[in-house]
Amino acid sequence: MHDKEIGLGEDPNLEYIPMDWNKVTLPSPKNPRPQVGELSDLDYWKLVVASKLIRKSIAAMLQTAVLTYLARNWEEHEKRLTVEANKEGITSEEMFVKIAQEDSR
Image (cartoon, rainbow, N blue to C red):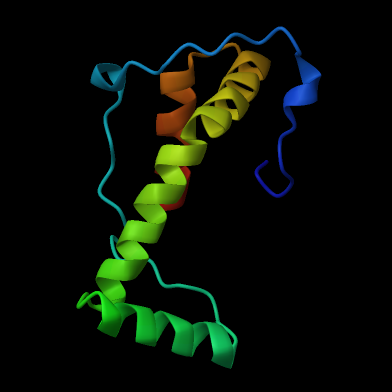
């Protein structure tokens, strides 16, 4: 179900309605410390040098990168979640939990 990216072009009138996180029960993650994909040598050393310059660990740098990505992009992902939820006749919150549970097995 989640192998291809879900486009927003399916419903141009889709209104953004923030999720009600009080309606979401999260499963425990299998791995709360996800790994980064392979980096080129140059990107790896840029990351190392940047972490030394700001006196942060590489793990802290990656955590910041992920949190920044989510802060900037979550609204678009939430719209995709709404499209998928609408296809199944469930709420976005229910769809979020469904996807999370699939990945927690």
